[in-house]
Image (tube, rainbow, N blue to C red; front, side, top):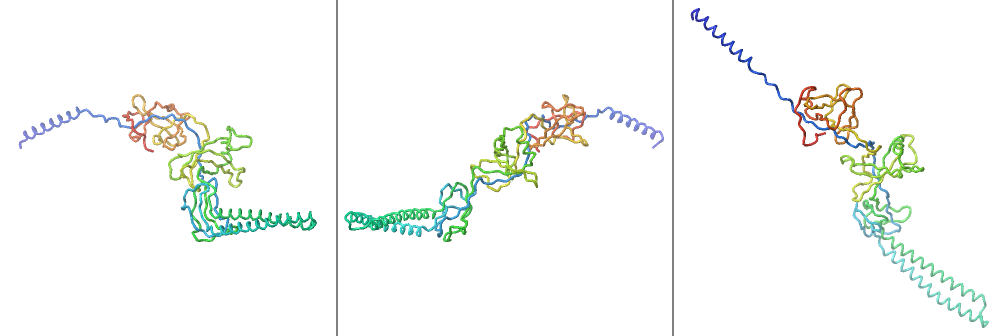
Length: 390
């Protein structure tokens, strides 16, 4: 290539580079769209302060079933764990020995009755002879005493017959109350005794209602009673205090009851008092001995502002929420944290001495997409169709 052609080629290349550079400078830079964030309004709720405890359930009444008479078990009339009614037959002892004793007692009464007829006739005859001088007063008195003695023996025989019949009734062991039976501790054919060595046949516990027991510290009990209508006796049942509870496998505190008893002394080793409440148990769902979680309200309902706990951020020791203004620009709002509720909402109040104002139910706070939101920058708000997850 000649020197002239080389210079022409370089000039053309330089001109093309300048043209390309000029075209690139004319292309406008596109701004990214505002990030999307999920927003929600703070809620104004009526909040009741409460305290939580652990407790247990126990039956109102527990009865140990034992035989009153001696005999062999002939029949068991209930199933293990069955709900039984009052006066329902649970065990039957062999009735034949008791029937035989009743028959013997009745026969003995008949013997005394026959002897009494003869004694009364003899007493009447002795009285007639006394009038005619054929008998002495001593003979008359003896005849009358014999008749009275036989009458007393008849009365005693009748009482013995009643006792024997009562033993026959006791041969059928019944439940003294309605409740749930335990298992049969003895099988058919076993001999049971009445007295100090009588074996346990089964146990019955009452079902409805059922008691709930738990311990609270002395100061808490005084707070519960303060300001409530309690008589001078100090009985907790007069305060009409309600409580909520739930089983270990249940969510929250779906059941309620009424406190009706506080122990008459404080345990000096723990500083606690035993409290008792009574709850309904119509379907027998609650079993004595079950562990329960208990919540006792300690105040009346008061209004409070709550926000999702996941919407709160931390800046060292300060807590704040991101709030959108009218132009969807993110602003910081400092808050003071309160109680965390069971549904994942947190009670908040304005932080003292910090600018930004207080949260209101009309504000829009960022609950999801907090990583994309930057203070003093706009965002695109999205309203969720459901509540955010805990």
